Image (tube, rainbow, N blue to C red; front, side, top):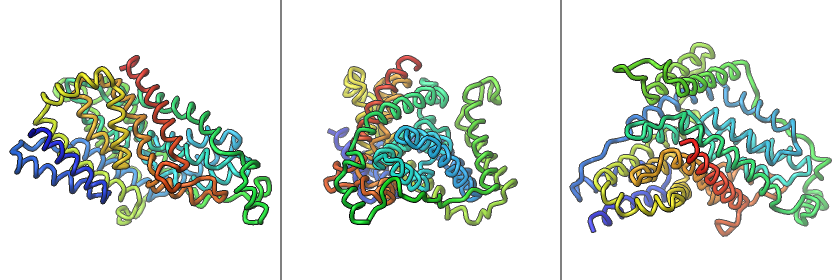
Length: 441
């Protein structure tokens, strides 16, 4: 009975935080810790200090890059890649959006690309909802493949320690190919969704009324953001920092030693990101007083607060009832691992936060005995769940940028343009991740 009551406290805190979103997730998570400690007499768990420090250093470095114009430069490069193969845009645009989100550690890079994707697809006779919807959803799973995302920081902090000893590169070698396979397979399905432009009565009616130019006559739109040499330098420095993290993850022997053993990736990521931000400051000289105004900084701070409260609450509950959790759900998860993926997917739907889903569900999966490789593969694909409901900013932006009107937000929560791409990408990438996790993990 006590376990059930405490579980209700945990779930209640998540629901209350979800209703308010943002920093409220962290506030209600911290309140949940207080209830578990003061009302039920549990010992407070360990706050996610390592994950928080990674998030803070990564957010600082990426905000420096954004302030110096690095994200704008990356966007212009991505736009050129997409424009090179416009007829294959339903595959190219999601892959480019995914890979650039992996490198930047944020899906914010997608916003300036949305009008470019919409314009290029429509002018080339491709229904804009196809590449727009899959590009949006693809950035969700990208954060499970990025060395510098908040979700990866949370995951590394959970799996790097004994007895798992499953480090960042072990995670990425499963999640990255699984995500790419999922995007490629999903593009084949998404490319068949909706009517062709010349067969869509609504689009043709708008063209006939003069409200919309025909695809061949539509004028090309210029990208709103502009590349600068400072932005190029900042982006290159940041990506070199990301590359350094990957190299240290690959080759343990080149890491500094601590007590005769290679240093863990948690501390290395923090140091490299601090160094990366400092080099950007020296080379590009951005006005650091404007850092708090950057969208990456604001979003990162919100993620850090939500991560702190919810992870602390989850750790407190799991530490107090490890034995009960193993006995009650261990066999279920072992016999049907997809239950774990479903759990991550549902929390992503409810909170629209990959790092929250990581800190809430991954500890339960590890405690229940899922192998880290299998767990990582399913964890990544389930991140698509943040787009099942049409409540995310990038979904709203994609619909607004689509002048053809083919990208819809719907009226019944799941009748929008992103629902089927979300489900298809989740299923394909989870399946690919599970197979790769079993083979490589």
